[in-house]
Image (tube, rainbow, N blue to C red; front, side, top):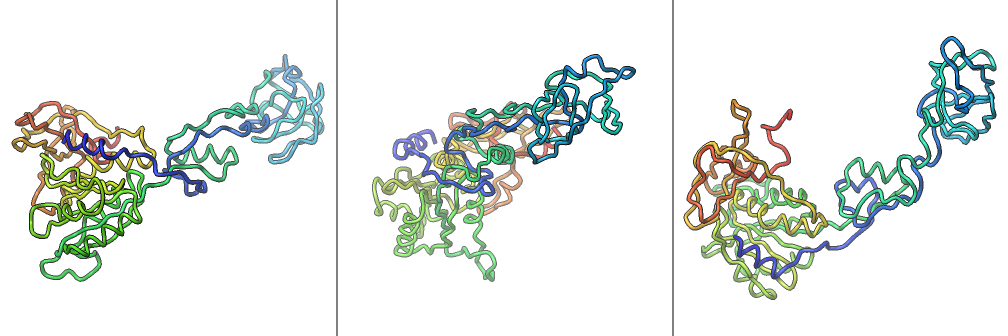
Length: 412
């Protein structure tokens, strides 16, 4: 496995595939391609944070419940309108939350601390300069770097961009990933399932996995295990995609023809043909004139696990998400787990809590070839090095998470 990763790195260095500007409504979960510098102050003016009266703070000094200070009401300030009054000594103006502070005022007294009598406002509490006021630029100041390049945009960052008046965000393009499945037994979901046929699991599961790590899947459908049709399909994939994934057709059977065809389509061709791992031994990797190709086993569990191990890191880098790291947690092995002799072994596990509150990793059996439920039940996987014979029961292990959350952590 280590040699396979080094070989891939020597032959292909994943980089962002380009940038584009997208409207804010399409920017969620995209990766910023540049720093965002604030073009204005937020808020752009001093504003009231309460409903009350705009005042000069010094006019309220000494006011209390028993000795109110009388101020002359000189007008009102509304939200969304420029103030049409100026606060002189001994004067005040009615204001509301969010309204701009009128010239001359430096504080706001809350309504509940006042009594309004015709043109007079009795102030029953003293305020200091800046009380109940949000100063211009106190949230974001003009020229500030508010968002950093390579940041993933969530609802919060999109809110920041909107506050700055930005309509479009410059983001990294999503790498296009062509996906195809092979096998005479595979048919598209929705069609009648004849005897000996199975629905295509891999193309759809892998498309979801590509989206999760920032790519744009292009499902090219099912390709027959026939030389010319396979060659045509692969050439089509290279014409539309930045990376290609196939599943099936990489073992040692008479219809497993993908490695031979890949070696004729460009340089350097096949760079990895089989890896000493379980599952996923027949995995094949090629680079065809600068485009990486990952040919995964037909077994859906194996295909998805190898995607996590080898393909995901490449797509993540091509999508500009280079600072992203896979999540891991520590757990206690529920039982002894054995490695395949001479092969790096990846054991899928389900996480739960024991009576003592410790996180426990229980093995999820791989099942028979084609079983897809394995990874739906698994929260992550444990890696057993080829030099190890087994992991003992109750041994502390590192679990590489396949999902963002898992049931045993609900409520934590």
